[in-house]
Length: 272
Ligand SMILES: [Zn+2]
Image (tube, rainbow, N blue to C red):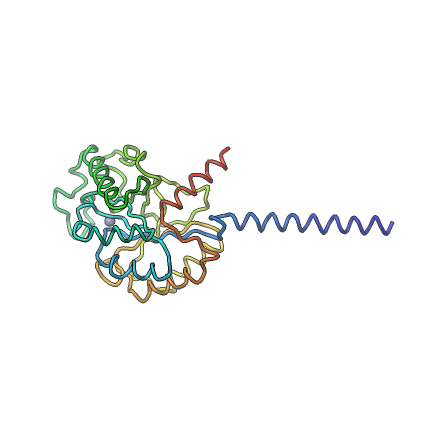
């Protein structure tokens, strides 16, 4: 009887151990073996990205995504620097050629007619996006990249334009704030948290939330240490970068193209 009791206890112990270890294995495999994924994205190809952000990320061997406006000054005049950034593993994402946005009444400064998305045809948006992909290909030689919607706008007049360029991208980043599980991520409009005047503590708090919930967190920066009215101070950005670097074993920090590919593969395997 005692022997039976003993073997039952052992069975129970092994069963619990099995359940526990399979849970652990699952929690380790959420995001490329890490607790969560963090994507750092920087919009509008500003010179501050080259001068402030990239050196700071390189120091910690962290890779990010830079959404490039094909006609912007800091892209056209500094192609060698962008090429160097791509060589170091950063993604050059597509943010169109002219960055058209629809003029809406609440906009403080109205855009000139040639940059007003209301004046665009569907074909013109599609052409600008494809031209920018060609420009970026000349710089980094890559055929896989992601897109970011200028001003977060997804439609030209009433038509969603991304379906017309979708085959050229692994995914597209939007501007709506949310964190998602792998299976919930919408690759045609990936959620992101726009940063403006945020402190390092506030940004780290978002990362901690993503870690505890095993979700994807995408940061959307414009100016860092200057360059835009949507600015984050350099010292605050450094605090975030330090935290990500210290916790590399728990946080998967990667360019959007890699994370979007991971999501695609995992969604396919879930749906099988
Ligand atoms: Zn932009």
